Amino acid sequence: MQKRLSRKHFRVRLEDMIVTLRQEILSGKAAIGSYLPSESDLEKRFELSNASVRNGLKVLVEEGFIEKIARVGNRITSPSSEQKTVIKFGYVHSFAGLVEMEELLEEFAKQYPHIVVHPIELPSGSYSKSLKQYMEAELLDCVMINNNNFQDFVENDCTHLLEPIEQMDDLYPFLTEPFQQGGHTLVRPFNYSPVVLCYNKKHFEQSQVPLPDSSWAWRDLFTYGQQLSVKNERFGFYFYLPSRNRWPIFMLQSGTSFQTDDSGNYRLHGSKIIESLEACRDLLDVFPRILSESNADAEALFLEEKVSVIMTTYFFLNQLRDSNISFEVSPLPGLQDSSTLLIINGLAVNSRSSNKEAAKLLVDFLTTYEIQLMLRRKTLNITAHRRAMEWEGEESGYRPSRFFLYREIVPTFRLITELGLSNYQLKSIQRDIMLFLSGLQNSAALSSRLEQLLIEAKESNIIHSS
Image (cartoon, rainbow, N blue to C red; front, side, top):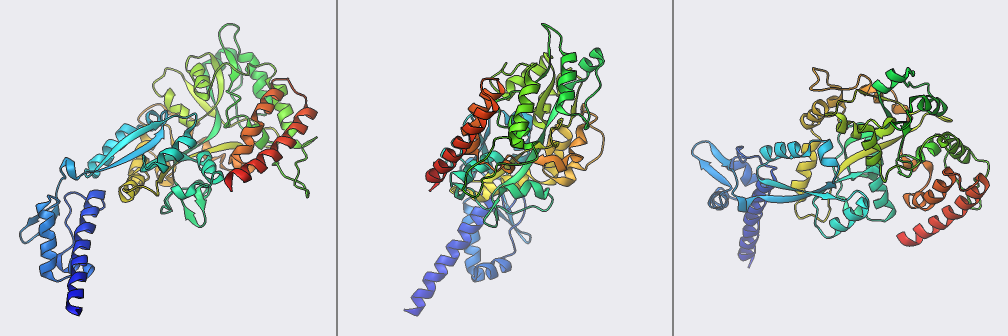
């Protein structure tokens, strides 16, 4: 009886060896052209006899995963189409062109020919919702997710869909911390950007207006913006106000956050937050509030040279690489302080994926020094890899002279969560704030309305999450 039991365990160990080695090859963990460990090492690893190890290797040879080279070892061979692992990679549709995604995936295919990556572009308008649905249905193995999307996952109690991933020391710590929960890192930072100003240098020269610098307050921008304006030709300054990456910046610059009193209520009458919105409203009086339906439309106006200055991100600068516009960047002007919004794009693995190892290899590959350096040299992105961004050498194309100002303004970076509100609460108050900024509501009415909406949204979000 004992003998039969041992034989059963032996067969299990042999099968384990075959399955494990096959999976390591399919996932790309064992690279094409490399050699498997020696037979004696495999004996120790899987607790098998030499004869059993050879039988297992014979199976992998017959399946076409390895070839036996006399007196050398067992070399991993190029796979047939039937042997390849397919992983589905989801990201927002506008992202691919900004980071040369096609080229990155081609490089990945060269290094990991056993893995085929199918890119899936998702709509930007409901990206968090689409991500959740696709991941739950196991239609995505690897995803691009930013810190705002991650906050949506936290608030909707679905971070369990994100597989814990190894933290990288070469990435800036302030990029990793927003993606940590319960002692685990759930998203690997890929690239990031603060919200900044981008301006047309030619327009400033024509209008003889001083170039913006870190000393500017918003009143300076709006004063000079009027001088930059040319009737029936261009506006001096514009941004898409309803964007959640734009209007909250004025509240972040109040130097305070939303807090409840001892009874759990918000008290906003006369607060610095309301004062910051009042300043924003006053400054906006001379500029158009809505000419577009998204940030992309506002940026298109800049590309058409119909706007001299816009609020934007480094991500957008990549759309300017092939234009004839001489552009430059500058920090945002300030109110009570000079805070700006930080946006971080990261990579995550679906915990429900049946190809997690292959998906992790893609995440690791896209955050290596070599790939991040490729992004640094060929694009205008700020990569998450510290050493890659410290590279110095001949530039491959036009790069604004003030491109590296982001290094100096790191102390001004703020996450939208630092307002003290959930994404759900921010969405609930946006309409009333837009009414106020449009002059259709006074400060007292706005304060009362926000106090009510914030409590209702907080209670509703608690019920929804529980």
